[in-house]
Length: 203
Image (cartoon, rainbow, N blue to C red; front, side):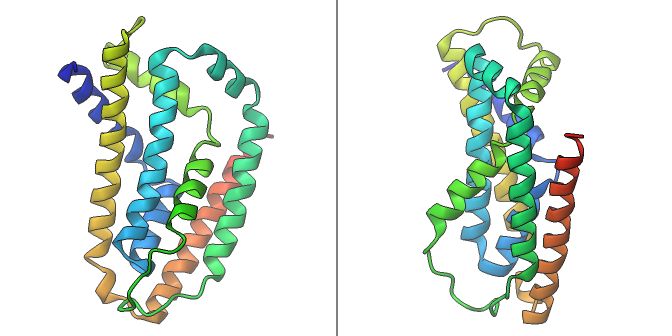
C-alpha cells in the first residue's frame, strides 16, 4: 500500500469532515443525550458516505458521477426534506437522564439513516476532486494508490468524528434532563435551518 496516498487520504477525509454540518450537530447531540456509542455511529455513517463518494472520485467512476450530477436536484430535494423531518423530530425529542445506560437497539438504523442522509449531497464528489487537485492528485490512479487514498479518507473522517464525540462526552455529565432538552431544541433548529438552506439552493 502506498503510504503517501494513505496519508493524503487521511488529511482529505479529516478536512472534509471538519465543517460542522448537520451530521456534526447530530454527532454532538447523540453523544450528549444517548452516549458515545450513538455519537460514533453517526460519525461512522457519515464517514462511510465520504468513503463511497471518495471512491467515485478516486476511481474515476464517471457513469455513477454523471448519474448523480444529473439527478442532483431530486437528490438534494430529498436530502432537504429529510433534514427538515430529522430537525423537527430532534426538536421534539424527549431526553432521558444522562446517567441512563444506553442500549444498543436501533444502532443499525441510526447508521444507515445517517449514511443515506449524507449521500444526498452528490456535490461532495466535486469537493473531493477539488481537494485532490489542490494536493496534486491529478490524472488516473492505479487501483493500489486509489484504494490507499479512499482508505485514508475513511480513516480521516472517522478520526474527526471520534474527536468530536470525545469532546462532547466531556460535557455530558454537566447536563441534566432540562439541559438535554435544550440540546435537542438547539440541535433541531440548526438541522431545520440546514434543511431549509438545502431547499433554498434549489430555487
